[in-house]
Length: 99
Length: 170
Image (cartoon, rainbow over all chains, first blue to last red; front, side, top):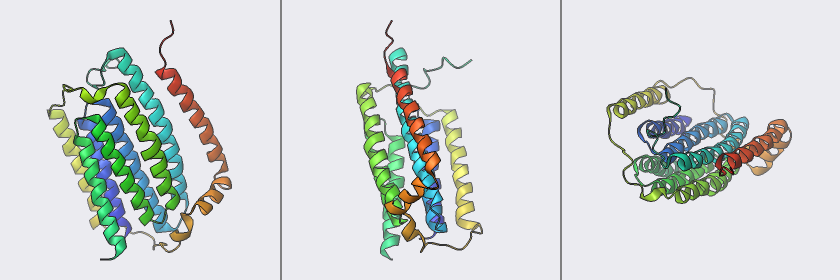
């Protein structure tokens, strides 16, 4: 397979994640869409790594996964704290930082 | 059609389909299960790129650890049966989806038609570099400092998660 196919697949799943973030109002599903976007970028990094025969792309994916794990733990803790305070995960109802 | 081409299209269809289902489901538990399917398809795609280590880390860390955390939080907050979350189609959402589609068309043009001038492929070399042995050696020599720094990152994440999620004592 040529690299363009992998990049097209990566772009498609990234855009699906973008639409999920823009269109959905459930905080958990928005968060899962962000994970989907992170994964699609990882796919293009691994595709470039295989195409160029260079291991650095895969190392970057390894560190991106570490950051994603930390981000998931902290993000879900924030969602739990928000739910405890507001009794909702609807992002339209969470507006205390809006002016 | 070779086996590689067939596997790519098979996994690509599963990946895109499960991503679409994930974004459109109303129930977050079902959305999370579709996201797990998407992660397994991505793991298979990494295997077609000779990245064995990344493929198994993908399934262990994402499908194993992160999605269990997601499902645990969904069930802890009992979000499965929230019905009236107000997922209505609005002007803002249509504009957002339209702009995203425009960005996709731009990327399709760049990758598919414009044929950006890439250096010649080294795909034969990639058979060696995806193994656990090669990545482990790189990780403990060239990338030793970033590898150690991730431990501080994970410690900060643990402390942050505990402090954010704990109940107020007073």
